[in-house]
Image (cartoon, rainbow, N blue to C red; front, side):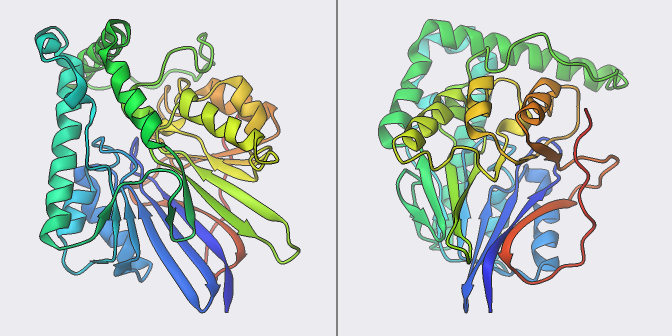
Length: 349
């Protein structure tokens, strides 16, 4: 009999795919959170088969961006994979809230918003075709052993309504315009060789997180040890400082359940925008995990070093390079089935 949990973080470059297996006496719950990009579906399916998993008790789409929900569409269409229940937002997305008259002048933002909507539509259609039950992942539901702690319906709608603000609309459009320009240049001339990694000059959390990322599903994995001590492990998707600030406030109102967490996922591939120093110094994860490609931006050097200064050890799915897609980092607590593994290497200074 096992009494514990294991969490696998897969390396899919800047994309998320997390497998959670929870054991309690004779009961076992298997949960897949996100599936990377569309091109990653065969890799995820191979990983699941290698782990002996052909049935998921729960499938979670944290939010329908291509690097999280894109890989789930073809995975759901694979009839050899049994899925008991899916958790995905089925209502409005940003594209439903943007003023149509502003589309032409905000094409970079619109392109991403439309891609997310299409991912949502295709994923829900695939689930409906297989008659897999769907529920929206709002707080404070439970997904097996995982508690949803964000977003509430009120926070979700407030974030989507932020897109009506000209300031945030312009900021996001300019941000995506720069990314698109860089992608075009890289497609023509190739990526420039990595330069020495240096700490960014911008402060952590200095720029707002996009509303589409703020409404990412945040999950909390509680685990009670044999000595009665209860631990809480947050899985944060692409959530930003507003969502995590609300989580901190909830923790402060609940005897500081998340003060100095044992481990947590650093959101949005270790982006500098999604956490600030104040939040890091509150959560103070002893162990932190990042799903990232290992570029100069992801994970952020400043973020990694701030977590380390707060007493934490940081692991990234890409490290040490070179890594092959599908490689994974695993964290366990309690008693779980043994696997032959190599100890992970923590990130550099």
